[in-house]
Image (tube, rainbow over all chains, first blue to last red; front, side, top):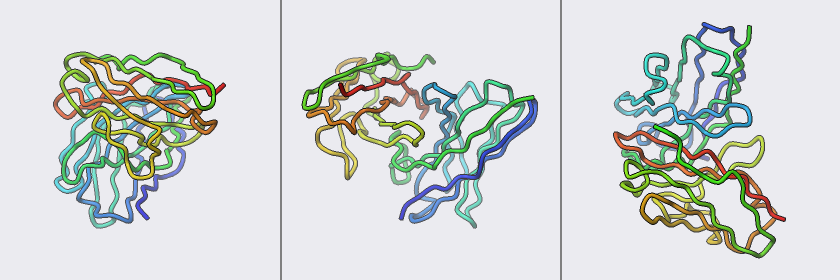
Length: 122
Length: 110
């Protein structure tokens, strides 16, 4: 079945970096964009950016530009999101999600990973 | 860009209908027909309920419907059921292929 499986929980110190993986299965990996969305405890959803697994092109939310890097490895159908210079307010659950558009962005995210909790604490 | 504006809470009794609004600007909701709605139960990942303003993914009950007028999109849940109690988030294309989410609405089934 179509699914996204993310890496496990992380605990990091302020100033460190975290890299979260998202492995796709059950569909043509290069045919669908992947978004990254985070959710701080008790808060709403926050869009971080997307990656086109086919071309590697990325688009980051202005808030995260300079701190986030999204990459992919087509040999293992996996995308990665790395966030650097972590702060305590980066503590959140990080989700990857597939855009439902075939080779284009429709904004609707129809398949979600299970989420990766990231805790930033000294 | 500021988040789209949603009421923090909404409620209705079983069988009733409830509508949740999502207000943006002419730079997002008002311009693009790429408005989506998500349902999120506690501790779970969000689930897509509506995309492109009013389209339902396969498997989503037709009790869920979406619409848009000007800068405001709406999600209507008809025939409320206990399992509809959840948080609901809207999102919109915000130009240059950016995505903007709403702050979320907690729906309570009385």
